[in-house]
Image (cartoon, rainbow, N blue to C red; front, side, top):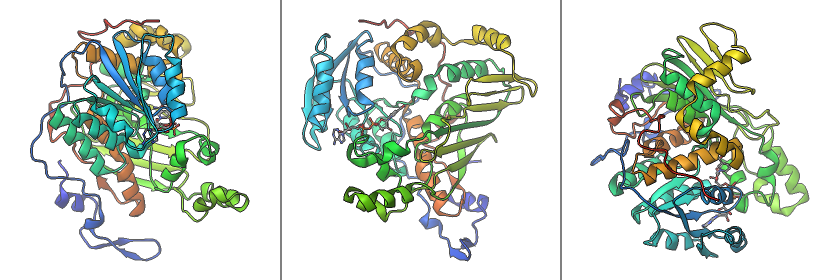
Length: 467
Ligand SMILES: NC(=O)c1ccc[n+]([C@@H]2O[C@H](COP(=O)([O-])OP(=O)(O)OC[C@H]3O[C@@H](n4cnc5c(N)ncnc54)[C@H](O)[C@@H]3O)[C@@H](O)[C@H]2O)c1
């Protein structure tokens, strides 16, 4: 069933104008809901879209804080990459990365010192791909501008913060026919790729349920004056919901073929109270004026749990907690009619047709049989290069290999929009007593015929590695 406004109201039981609020009846109007549908004028399908081959792939990087420099260091190892430009508002960051390329063939121009210098990088005619690793609020503005200047885009996660931004990405990518990839590196981790390969071979049967998470203790980092530029990450926590859904959702969505034969229909979301951040902000502000602007703010609940239902009736549970002393976990659970898998707590395990995990020997034999092509080809190299154990390198290598071979990217603008949309949708649901809200169909119906992601490296895999 397609959800439109009328049947969404029916589905959510909101045909009356009131629903129970905290302790009393709260006025509820659908007008307050996110506009999950949006009138579309025309649709050009970017899923499966093959742009002309590029060789070399000339890249400009924006954002060289914690994350960006590692991307530059990985990309310089990939054949056919030409690093043409580097941008960060902070001169010391950009100079440091430029220096790191001194003993390489790359001679990038630098852009720094002003809020909008990055626009000049996007405007250069000799750049094919803009790679964005800035604070979240800049991802969509930068991606939209870069595509409008004729550049493909890879943006860090999440690609967008609001539904409007999600639509801007989709509409701009379709209009310009430029790729807009969200850099969801967790789709390229070893266990996730193995699970995807096994699911394609039917080992889990029909998928019933998936779970993912981003549970990572960033408490100290978020309050640190140095860790994130201008305290952007702490400020994001003024929003309440699952602000960082894509690490958990991306690999589950690929197993379920979301946007490619299946779609997410609606979600509901609940947040715990904040038992950590507000107290810390007040404690720090009592000793240090720097923290005063944070002292009277309300912060997101420490743990958010969001559940999504898909058209075929699969369910997805996503969790998000970056502010309590929790064990790191992306959960990554898949369960189907024939078997299940679970990654966290490590090590990842499989159970086939029963309640018990396979033993190590059985696991290894599955691994031997179902390791996908990208891991066979690049897995060892990726482990040596590193970047979250190698997944970052596999992601970058695959992206460049696709661009050089004129192939569709594994992760397209509809994935960027749908996966990122969970943040604003969960915010809305949390603010509205966990009411359900429809997930927009960013593909304009093309999900019905879009083909699953290629995991066989068809017509690809000829990109090497350089020193
Ligand atoms: N996929 C992953 O595993 C992963 C891991 C870490 C971070 N990230 C993502 O990477 C992004 C960056 O995170 P980070 O930890 O590096 O943050 P950071 O604050 O260290 O880096 C952001 C950089 O952007 C620069 N910047 C800010 N405004 C700018 C502007 N107007 N023009 C040019 N540069 C500007 C800052 O100077 C800073 O160096 C975030 O989106 C984050 O979610 C992803």
